[in-house]
Image (cartoon, rainbow, N blue to C red; front, side, top):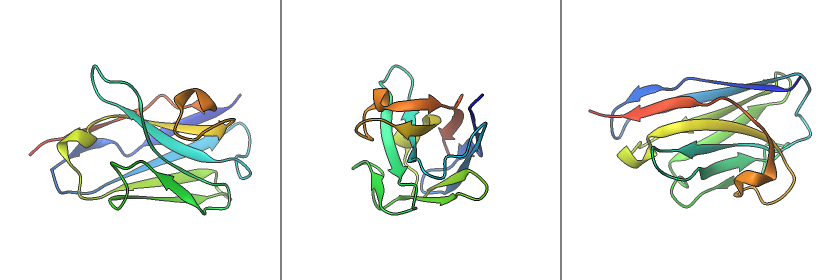
Length: 123
C-alpha cells in the first residue's frame, strides 16, 4: 500500500521560514516526480511545485518561485519543502503528491496524495 506522510506543519510568522517533509512508503518513488499542493479554506487546491526524480529541474508556481525550495532524498524516499519569506496567503493545508501522469500543475495528474499538514501564518 502506497503511503505519503507529511510533517513539519505548524505556526509561522509572516516573513519567517518553515520546513515540510514528505516520507513515501509502500514503494520507491525514486523514478517518479513528487510535489506539493496546498489548499486554503474555501479555495481550490493550488499547485506549489514539483521536483523531478533526478532532483532537477524543479517546477514552481508563480506565487512560490524565489521563496520556496525543494530537495529530495531518493535513498530515503523523502522530499523536503522549504518555505521562506512566508506570507499570509501561504497558509493552508499542504499536500504531498507523487507519480504524475500529466501536467505537474494539475491536481488530477497526480496518482498519490498524502493526508496533508497544516501551515498557519500569523504574528
